[in-house]
Image (cartoon, one colour):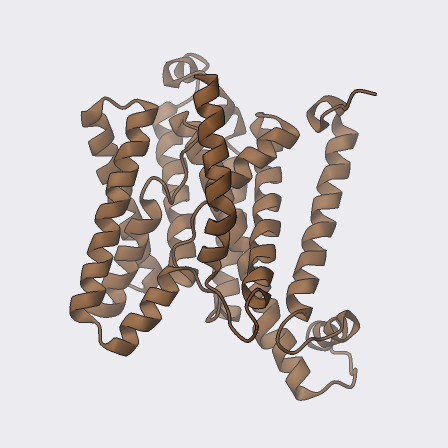
Length: 346
């Protein structure tokens, strides 16, 4: 029997896929809370969460209660929201720029956000007015504007936008390295360089209260523009002829992408390839229509990042690998496959 894709099966198949993805996300978060140097049974994990959320009185050691609630659960929730934000950002940029290789990391937005965050942390820019997230947001916007100016001057084609993004990324990475090398002490330099590789080690509940609302807000705003995103597949002129307010939609969605990327970088550093790989995997499963693509992308990104966090904690005994290293190890081969497919279609 010939296999039938999800996009051909109708709403019930999409509903089944959504429920399966939600169950998978719940399972991955449960595993992320249970797995670590101190293994905690899933039943104990559920009891610890119940004690805090519902005021139950299960007898648990203070160590297990603290590990589950104060460390691992918050870390897993931040990982899920970070994955959703980066994946959504990649899907939006690919639609707006009509380029399958577009994503915050490749276009230099992550590098610019890293530079902005480092300027606040080390150079003290903002004099206490700007926080880490604000500095990262300003850096992300500056990077995107710079790449946009370079791309416009170079002709604005999809390939040149990517090349300008790579150039901008290298520029901001060099600026970040220069600031760290010349202005940070040895302890600051070690901490920042590890953070720039992507680290969830320092996240706690205040980061959950920031990352989850931003991811949900970004998702709602993106879902409100699914018709416009579908229209952009035919170009800006075609979108305008269909009644889409092209400039307004571009500003709103680019700003939302910068905000999501900046919030991610300010909390966990620069993480690459998530916004590139996950939208393509979701597009393969549910098709190009953004009403289906965006939910699949958000859920897929959340599952992927929680899984990557688990791998980063267990792949090397008694050592935590930066999560950006894990995503790159899986994302770089996928990037090569996407490049090959794009070349084959050309």
